[in-house]
Image (cartoon, rainbow, N blue to C red; front, side, top):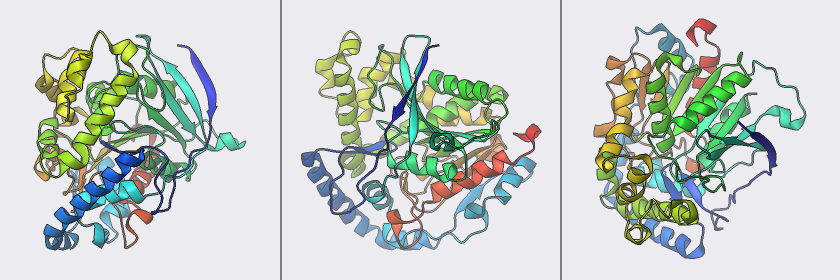
Amino acid sequence: NAITLVPSPQEHFASSIFSRPPGPVSCGLCTLPGTMGEWVGLKIGAAVAVMVAAGSWARGLLRRCGHLAVHADASNSTIATILDAMPCLTKSKYSPTLWLSNGHMATVFCALLRRCPGIEHERETIETVDGGHFYLDWSHAAIGGETVAEDTPVAIVLHGLTGDSADSYVRHLANSVGQRGWRVVMMNFRGCGGAFLATSKGYSASQTDDIRQTVNLVSERFPSAPLVAVGVSLGSMILTKYLGEEGSNTPLSGAMSISNPWDLHHATDSLEAFPSKQLYNSRLAAKLRHLVHNNKDVLDELVDFEALGSAKTIKEFDALVIVQMFGYADVEAYYADATSLKWAPHVAIPLLCLNAADDPFSPLTGIPVDMCQQNSNVVVAVPPCGGHVGFPLGPLGPFGPSLMDLAFAEFAMAVAKLPKKQQ
């Protein structure tokens, strides 16, 4: 496959809470707007979220007193070793942000207010066997002129729906291990990160060809390096499906899933209820329609653009676009194939899953807290609050540390230290 390397400039995000960000902000499945009109609309939506949150404030305070539940099979010695090296989950006192104890508030305000760190990186274009392409953004000490050992651990980060490697949560996850000397690969799905589609095939929760190609490429390039991946929201579904398909054949030593919707049927029901439909669903559908319109030249024969204009929810978009793009009988068949509940039992490496109990995208009833009984390689950690791709800790909220960053760093370091036969 042809591979080209081109430099990519540092990108910084406005950190002032009084200024409008220069472009779209993504929080996994939730992409927040960049135009002034959309930004005003978002503020109205945020006000709605505050009003809804007020009704459940007392319940949120009670949840804050709850414990972070870690569901794991203690008889799995590898899992026990990893968890013993993760004080943020098993030893430290869990202290979420009091004023963001509602799931909607944690989701919205962490996306709005959390600063996006600049990361120096190099962009690599990966061409696929079907004529498509996607971008990998590499961040490592070698860019600054330092020598990096061939066995330096590598982390692969997968973003969420309508996101890319410039998103705040991607950068923070990359920094959490990059600052510890790791190489980091921030993956951009097809059509993301400023790319246009070269074919009529984009990305979906069930499309694992590109992550498989990425993992194999990194493994072949650095065969002696421990390799860990983390997926956020939709990216976690792609990662889990890949792991279930590969079983013990994956070169990965460990993986982490953050804010996984798990079952798209349950997630859809949650996202189509008030206020999630107004805050997230309709906005995501608009972003998806925009992505398709930007690639009309290659999708014109596949997509009914007249009907697409009436797709106001993610499910309606999936029925019109994803079902056609990937050859499913209907949207129900797509959701059944993509659900992580189907693939997690077949994962053969340590998989840490972090889901908040108040995630508006993934209701608590859909989180498989008993998955470790089916597969001892899977750990499910459920803090009582944190929202979707939020997990703020301490009084500073989005301006302070995040549980997902701390957990990923500790998990990745623990996996990298495992004896080779356990990786």
